[in-house]
Image 1 (cartoon, rainbow, N blue to C red):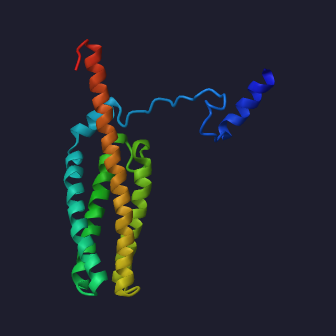
Image 2: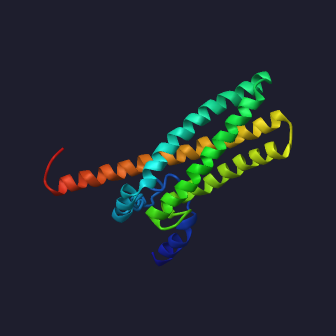
Image 3: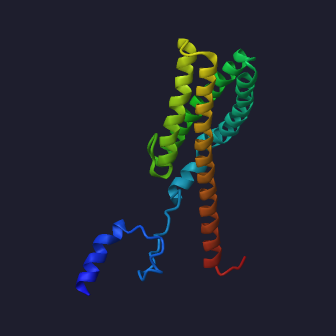
Length: 195
């Protein structure tokens, strides 16, 4: 028995069997997930104007993205409209810079650090890739690096990274709403009311 327990303790971290309970091992229960915001962070989030700024810039950036994506795809399909496509990517990049700067300020107000707060760590990491690709596009255009098609393909790579990053943030916002709903339901249940 002692040997089995000691052996199990050393092999548990590397056990990759997806059917542990079927194989005779006990099911592991995941630790409860930490809510996205503490009560104090939620208070700061709701009290800062930067939340509104982010709420306005995010849909604006998405609208600019959709128009620009259409222009870039049109150029790649027809070879026409390079100037309009280029201008649209530049505008999209400027809006991205604005949302990143104001987002960093928002993160500082809410979480006490400009970037990489634990609640948004991976979103911020991926945001760095989004920024790098958009900035590389600007560098290519301003420096005359590559041909028009190559520049537009770089813009598309930046846009793919943007879509992934935007999805991360949408999922995070959804998680925050679910956290808040669960807390509200817990308060209602604690008061003895039913839904």
